Image 1 (cartoon, rainbow, N blue to C red):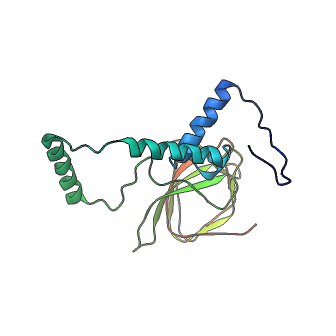
Image 2 (image 1 turned 30 degrees about the vertical axis):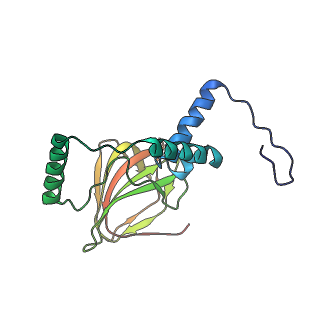
Image 3 (image 1 turned 180 degrees about the horizontal axis):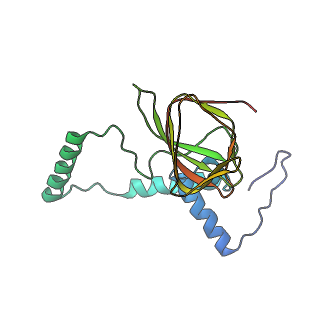
Length: 194
């Protein structure tokens, strides 16, 4: 039974079956770390903990099994090929997570940072109406619009558009009408505080 700060019993509203299933699915995704904090905020923390406990119980119930020799050989061959290639970055779609970019409605997912050059590759996701403040480019900045739109003033770029901003230029405030997903490759950018 939940109680408020004054000790009064809190009554949770009844949800229809579809709404309850949607909340459980959201709690499941949050328990697996696949949602941003903003996306997970629609679910109560206790629901997420309940799903985390369910996942832990399932994992604990699985008996370890040794792979067949042929499976082990194929796996070891793949590991050897991977070790030979040794990519500098290997980020899978469900690894890592989205972080707040520090601006309302804007999240960032770091993909790679070259320590020598300082160049970074990130995904930026903006909700409809979200804004990025004026900033200067410490290095050339490449931007590929994967989904949605990005705008400053009357200039608009949409899905499939690509733009490169030169080093030492200043970008006026950016915004998105429909929301977006951007692939950005850049050096350090300085944001003006509003």
